[in-house]
Image (spheres, rainbow, N blue to C red):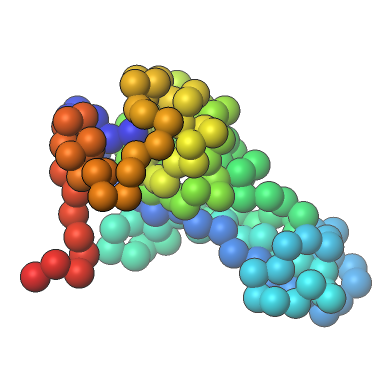
Length: 156
């Protein structure tokens, strides 16, 4: 989660994609979720960490049956050990969110920005006070009460 102390930390975006493989000899090619709509082919999964300017910093190739959620802890470790980066902000999608991943990110003194499903939200430190559901017409005041500012990308 973003904190005041993380304002000057470098920010990185992380995402995974898949591509299909036509050969039969790749040890990474496995049946798996096909993001390119080719479930009839074996897949490989590619993870990419980029800067806010789009420069690639780190990439990893995973077996085709690797779920998004399993890649995050390896990236957190590699950011510290291989890239020698200090505390940073990691931005990723909800497919990579789990209580274990968020705990690993916080244990490494990084912060994160992501969508969080309500079943994971209950395990995030400091978020236990959130109501079970927030009415669609009342979410902005609820966020404001908790110190967040809502931004609308479509607003002028």
